[in-house]
Length: 360
Image (tube, rainbow, N blue to C red; front, side):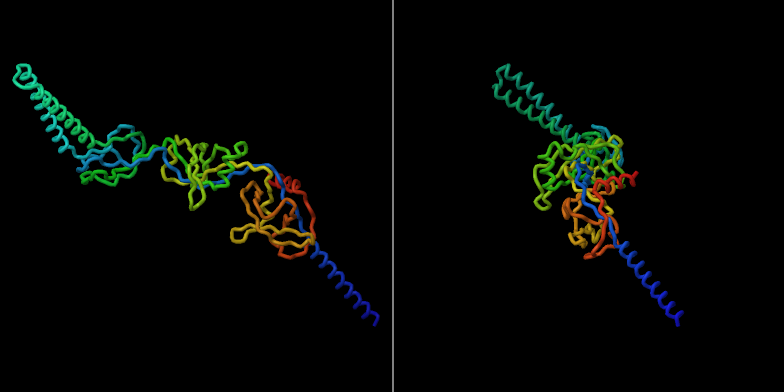
């Protein structure tokens, strides 16, 4: 009987010890680390989607109607200024020139005869003047014929690269028809849109505004090795988007960049009194970022934040929390709304120091 009582007491003791142990573990598991956002002066790199354009890009069109007789270049070829590109069959224009030259010669002879007759008082000086006017008209016709003949030779107005050539030799070309395009890629422009608040900040806060020297992220994710410079801001905002276009220019000695490419302009934007928090303190739902804020009763509530920039391991927060709000630093994935927690507090500077140590 005594043994039975002792055994029962032992079991009860084990049960109580086990419950106490589990409770302590549960309490220990429910303990979190919290901190505040740090307020620092910093800068971050902002990306702007951009459209790349050649410094000069033009369409080359036929100035006269006729058959395409010769093509002297190939697609993708680099050409020099003044280089002959195409020839439209010139026979008709050569004939017109010969006719105009003959008429000019006849008018010249008429003028000589008129001068001789005026000297002999056979005709009046008006006849000489008429002959002179006829010669001038004939010379103008010659100049016009030469101009039309010159239009049958299409030359490059500047050095650049030939684009696609849609027509082939023998094609009938109409006046104004597209023959190809020519791009000067020695330098390129990148156009990107900036919001109205960013534009005002850039224009008014000259000392602390975004750097006018900008990088370029290419479509393959690699940065261009040359820096560009913001040179032009367009005069009007787009009514639909509320943005205004900036233009940055980039050197292109390797001819890597071509007209029509896309990329991302990388602008370094300084921020005073920026609110920064560790990235690990956040979680995402449908592309929105949240943190768990701790209230005065140690109850946690999820809160959406707006991020305007990223630094290594950090987010720069625009809205959603203040510098006085405490939020969970770790264990975010296990936390739930309205949980009452115990926590250890870490100062923001300690958190930043630990992040730097880990990064090293």
